[in-house]
Length: 222
Image (cartoon, rainbow, N blue to C red; front, top):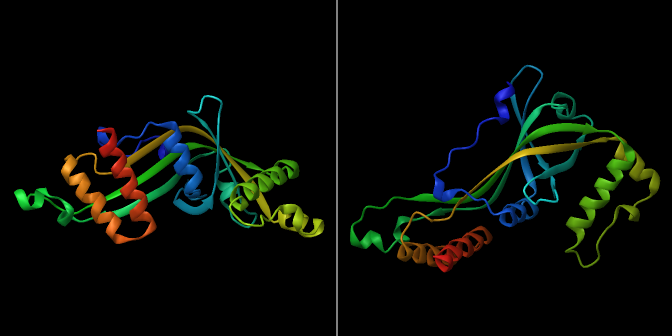
């Protein structure tokens, strides 16, 4: 069971992402993690939990913080244990019809482009009210910042917030390793990458647009 968070995901070298700013950007813009841990019987459990990334001074490590319902057994089962938090960024189908090489030799197949970050670490359950209130204020400030009239925790009655806080438990994950994979057509020719960008732009949805930008970055850097 202790090996849950020990093994890295499979990825060819050209898909490895090591840029700390790019990784932090995905964690910030796609904060809903799939948090995997072992339950009391040793089985695997996966919960969808928004987590906030707090990088350390080096920018290479840090902690993930969030909260769960007190009724959720995760905070007791995983307290002190190894966990894996998976963050999914832009992802989309890639048609072989977008590749100019299809017309040249036909040796092309469909694929899927995506960005993902896996955070390995040890979870700590936190029931300290001051810590929890600071977390709630911080999370609210981050996610309300884009609203025309941002809501704050202080907008709600004190007794109501106190009751809500008693119903949750904080979690903190000291991250020991981040594995990041950007599969954004790096293994295709420049002409095929241009074809992917054009095909994605024509799809007209947010994930396709975000992926088109990532593939285009590869063209620019190449």
